[in-house]
Length: 453
Image (cartoon, rainbow, N blue to C red; front, side):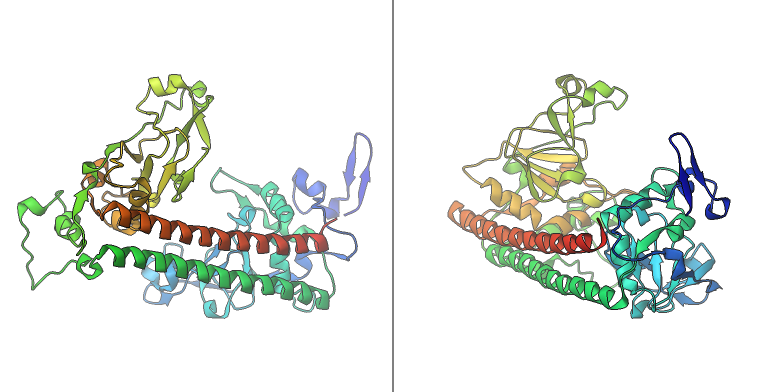
């Protein structure tokens, strides 16, 4: 773009402005290196116009893109969907090797290349698809550039709309220039990236294996009969005693039976028998001063089966006094009761309050049950708590479900052995996660050193 810059005026040629917006009158300086020739993204990407009308009686594969260069993946876990259930009838067909992006999540690094297994899948107009001139650019090289922090910041500036539905301006994206090394150099960069990616995938597989082995260790150590968790219905009718129904609803019939899967070795106790269960509250959002204090306040999104040492928000003593929030001591166990986070836990490493979506286990009978034993056991039960959830758009459990939940209690010596085993596993998993972080940092530093000033 030809530019004339004065102290007070910035002039741009009319023909160089693709849209009437300040951002187009001033080409974005992303900070790219000058050692390679620069080229407009639109000079090697051509918008695909392979459009179809979805037919009600045909099955279709759908596509989505994970943020932070997470890849292009099938929607609905790979299951096809009948056209009758697809609301937007005009859709774009994608082909292997095409570059695809999410208008909404471009500002979060949602770019990728369509894999072979998604050939012929469909996407809405919110997922622009482009044919790539492979003689000018290696497709994955473009993905690596577009998912750097600098480029994502550019995408953020070029996105507009309501808070959760901001969309990138495609003209701005295509008009942006990027450095273009030779094809050989691009392939070399991509190869180095793939080497690190392969190593991280191997480490991720190790993490999954360790987590699975730890869960099996708990099941075997406690003598839990996993098979009896399944609900068995003999014939066309299933009869249930009134005393066995914990709530009025099909999902809760036989809840008691589902809980009685437990240990062949140890007696089971309800959680309310070994501790107290509390909750919290949300101070009025209308009073901004409530959220300017120094008392930690936990939301369910902060529960990640780890020890909490800090919180995103903090409230005042006045906020505690004028709400249902309560201050809980160190070593309490917090569990999420609402929505997607149901069953997620944390242990308090600090004194803290919570919102009403958290159950808090406190005053634990330490002479009878070790706190970490209880905490680690609850982490093995996340999926079970999700099964007990009820409700419509946002299923949830309540403090009563938590209080009545059964837990097998071995002798203290066995509890401590299981805790020690689990802590060692957690240390190993954290070490593997650190290794992934280090490798990710290495490849990001490599790309940044090549592409930026």
